[in-house]
Image 1 (cartoon, rainbow, N blue to C red):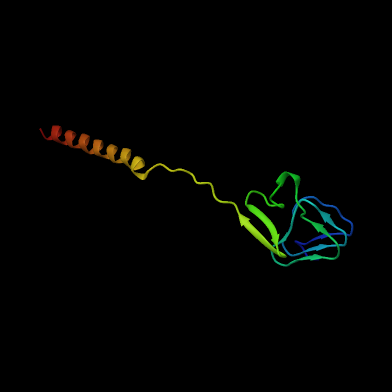
Image 2: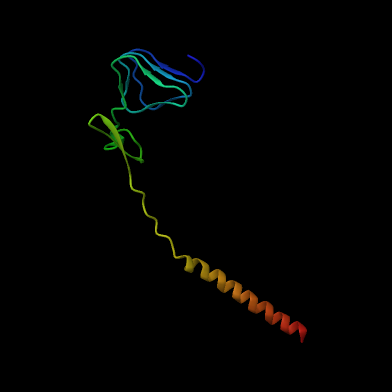
Length: 120
């Protein structure tokens, strides 16, 4: 294994995500009940009957995902269902722009009155 790789020996128990740049090798009978095995470049090699990411009690209903959605298996195919985004009410553009325009109008009026007084 090169730099940036991870290996879990046989009968290992680990809880959490395992992140590696190159690859992750997993021996037989490895258990990681609350996490995922993620690599950037290569793959994850499972060598036997392993139990990976069967869910965490703190993430009930999400099958191991955080707040991004749910993962389920339908007819042997993984299906990711993203959560609907929360709608954030935003103030009308007019109500944001109106005070600025009013301020500019007042400044213009004040500058004109100063110009008129200075000419007199």
